[in-house]
Image (tube, rainbow, N blue to C red):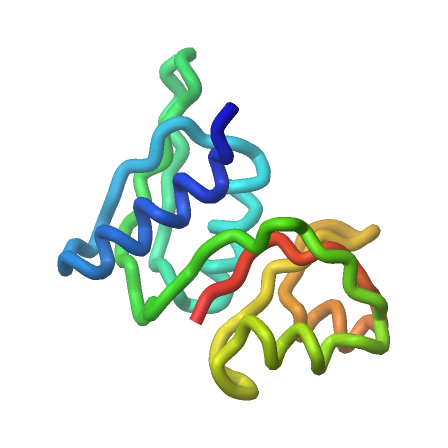
Length: 128
């Protein structure tokens, strides 16, 4: 069994390192779509498009922006609402430089959104 999210983020990171501005990710998943939507809102990618072909579908990501590193966080640690500082220091290089993607009871969001809503959750991925 493969981790679709880890594979997708690895494809994005690899294409950014070799200087390409777009990539194709196959297969796709709902979790990967939600993470890409957060990346788009945060300015790390310009756009993405889901192409359905009946065999796992594929995602075309365009305009890969200022990404130094991204990846999944395994195991998916549970973070209490009052413990964000410790986890941000562990996975993000400096304050306000990068994001943690968190699964909360209100859906996927960034660590900053979860912090402002005073929510805890499980760590999914990081990007900076």
